Length: 273
Image (cartoon, rainbow, N blue to C red; front, side):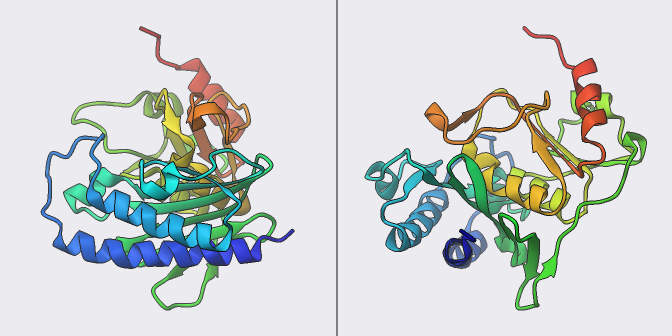
């Protein structure tokens, strides 16, 4: 199965949500000190737009999404085909109005991510992939171009993308990996897309507990662009487990740096409480 129809539906759903979010974003009053946990009505409306399009096309498929909206509440939550949706990944960036947010739509078939779409509404850019067919990016009405990870082969020469750190703080992945450059942005979807497009070499998600929707779509972008995605310790990432919870963190790389990055992160892993 080549999942071309599924990708087309995901792209349509992402475009519909992006059109709505651009208007909502323009009208939104900024929240300069928005907390990481913030959620908005825009999250819920975006999710309903996406899930409605998916369920119209594939009514028997299971759904996994971040917000408790009506379509999700009435949906099957487990199955061989599971759509994984984050209606606004990086809501903090949306609320602050810095443009650093994305829409993430992924499809997991029998445990494997086979479709991934990461849209960046503020930039009118969309990165997407389907299993075995590479990763592509399109900005505005331009033709799509293929995405490829970097060829950097030394951690000392690498670019690490991470969330915005507190002033004066050095997150432990930075201390462990010692990259040449650190780039900061909100949204895991944006970060994973940056690795896939060759704009960064590494991304490390250090949250102790996050959801499938935070990484699923972006996972496929990176792997189809030639990179590698695992838990921080190097174990494969599994989707669709009970609670849709991820507890092993995430390391996305250009592939060439992966083994060295896993070793470096394990050698400098922070002590427990």
